[in-house]
Length: 622
Image 1 (tube, helix red, strand yellow):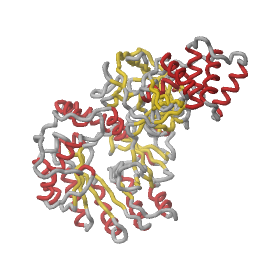
Image 2 (cartoon, helix red, strand yellow):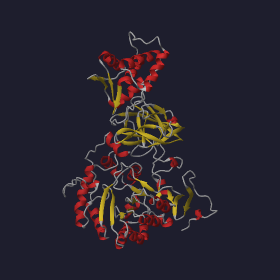
Image 3 (cartoon, rainbow, N blue to C red):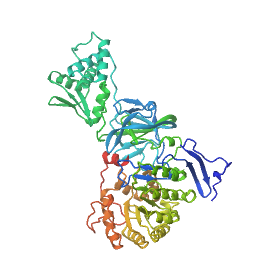
Image 4 (cartoon, rainbow, N blue to C red):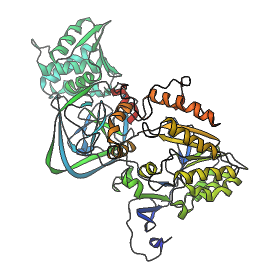
């Protein structure tokens, strides 16, 4: 193959000068439109996040693409909710700031990992409560039906009437008037003297500023009431899981209740505790309206159970400088609404890569992976835990034929006594069968081949550039002939496209005939990034299935549990017929007896409602 870009004195290639460790960027005629960015990596042994459901802790990925979908961005003046309950303009955020994000259907604190600007056409989204959100068309907000693009997208475009998850717009805070200061001092004293430094500092400052105005007014005004409630909260208030409470004794309980009602808060009193009704949205509004000195994470721990309707969407007809961030949770709360952020790492924010076209055409190659891995495995801290490869990007993609990184990786793992497994669609693995056979003499070696269907036309449409189904069946035979175990992943099973009894029976029969030692079947997952790509493919190739997929997946990443149970029931007798007992996996839990399938072949369960509430959307889309 011609890799002219690697020669000394070669013409400049498309390069990404900001990529850490970049050696060169290479184009080659054998890989049309693909740019390989060769880097010197500092580490290739990656630990899987503790919350991951995967049955392994470590991975090695010598190749990778970019995993973010597009550049999402907001107007710089947009107020972002900080983890401590404060607000900061989008433009003023900094790396390291702690903001409010979401995880598992609840609000949590998360850290800003990157912050940058871009110039885009601006759109304005107006909500029913009067909140105005200015962003690019690529920006996504979380709706009760899933993530919605403002001005782009086909199946997931935001429309008037959509409900956006959040707590509503920012309430106007108090002015620091003499009345507010007087009310605050009364609240701190009557609520019970506080030891909170921020409250003490404020009380001392207010007392020094207005020594002659510390008196109970005949008719408390609104600003005095705001100060009074802020002082009571600083002295005797708390907020847990979005519920705000004030411990109030008898002499002031009436004043607290009257003050809350004056500011349009509903409350209840029980056992000396006044509770603000309305959950997290009202707790947050309380903090914004009265402005206590103490920091209050009013949303932290609260469920995502409120939403606001979209009443207007308009293109502003002009370009603006817009801002974006990357956070640890992949989202943040801006102007009271949950916003998706870009998943790019710092090095990707100016590479402008995406999960669709760029994932296929911008490949990062860790050319020193074998050497770095060898060094890492020699560490006395390494416990020789199982390492899984192919769980993120395929280590035997076509470029491996040129770079030949896997032989060194296999040798490093085997020499260190580390068990490992490889999952691939690539027939390049056959080249390394002698190495894998030798490695299996000293460590446990697992090989998995991904084969989802036999239809060549459908395979070319879904997975262009991957080996044909027949080539992968041949690979299974070669792996088994080499004396190695070979499991096969029928993944993904596509509802209404590859899940008929005849299709699955033929596929499993061919897999069994090739000598596979086991089969695991997984229904299609639609995680962010792949979800958007697949939706566009489905719209283009099978538009008649769109409504069925919406019903089956709702706003989540996984098919409805009832479909997965049905699929497992369909697979069980087929696997048994061909001598491939099903392996336990989370897709096959709670499998009913054989013959309990209820949905006809080639049809989606259009009449089966899914749980498409806010919690499900948040649990599965982050």
